[in-house]
Amino acid sequence: MVHISVVVPCFDESEVIEAFHAALTAALEPAGATFEVCYVDDGSGDGTMDRLRGLAATDPRVRYTSFSRNFGKESAMLAGLRMSRGDAVVLMDADLQHPPELVPRMLELHGHGYDQVIAQRDRTGEGAVRSSLSRAYYRLVRRFMDVEVVDGAGDFRLLSRRAVDAVLSLPESNRFSKGLFSWIGFDTVSFTYQNVERAAGRSKWGGRRLLNYGIDGLLSFNSRPLRLAIHTGLWLFLSAFAYALWIIANVILDGVDTPGYATLITAIVALSGVQLATLGVIGEYVGRIYHESKRRPHYVVRETNEPAGARTAPGTVDRAAVRTTPRLEAAGRTRPES
Ligand code: UDP
Ligand code: MG
Image (tube, rainbow, N blue to C red; front, side, top):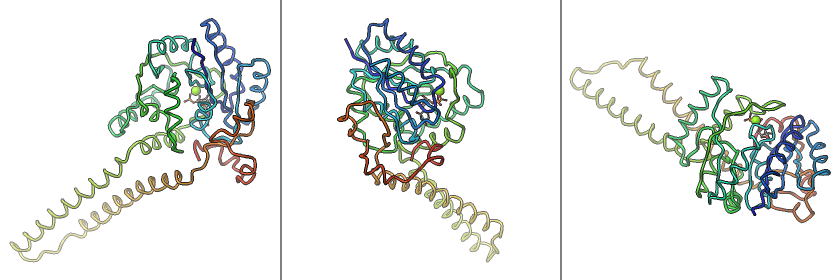
């Protein structure tokens, strides 16, 4: 019999967390599975933590960790994966958008030997603008990224123990899990379910945060934008060379001619634009190198019901270090990663 860990990142989910827990236990108990639920409170400010404490008091299968501030969903998922002890781990959102009824089906597929089982949502009920933007993004990503990322295949998935260990062995601090899950490989299967609206509370992914997340994803999985800069440079050089030949031929055939002012300005402005954009791309990568080179932990733990030994697991920080961490309250709250 497999032991299952359910990992649930929660950020300001006090309105749904209890309903979620009830639905989850109702779905898993009849399936005869032994399970634990690892809740990770991502620095919520709305009493999610009190609810988690309450759940842990009544249900011994509840384990929780609470961050000192909002570190972003990626960090919360990482903390949950580190907490998990099960032979299979299911990642779920707390807002009931990932229907717990589907978990037994995932377990069944896992029983057939799959290391990753992805529940892929369709886009029913989503705004037309958002869904068409997402589609365009995934088309772009498929062309440019070195790993395969599928539209609608979010974080609702089951990972076997060895898949979890593979994900945890990746040391990068800039984590784009969709890419990481695809990078580790293993036998993967997916099935589609109908998209559900959030049960209560509101989505934490505004347009801007989503855009930044998208850029992160594109940049953290390849160096093709840099390659693109080289290609642009080469093409520009070749066309400049051809243009120069044309001017020389003109001078030889018709004598000296005054070259156009407009051509000059256009060339200067266009080239400066290309250079600035390229600098920006390089800057993004340098920033990432800087970020990675600091080797900061992914999150700081404020509170947990884990036994003391687990508290010093990698990624957590001892108290002395926490005290010297600068206060990042309101500002840090809106950033997905920092
Ligand atoms: N979440 C989190 N930290 C964040 C933002 C979101 O842990 O900074 C959690 C949130 O509590 C939820 C899941 O990630 O369980 C998905 O978030 P949300 O429902 O807001 O995203 P959406 O479903 O709109 O993409
Ligand atoms: Mg949601």
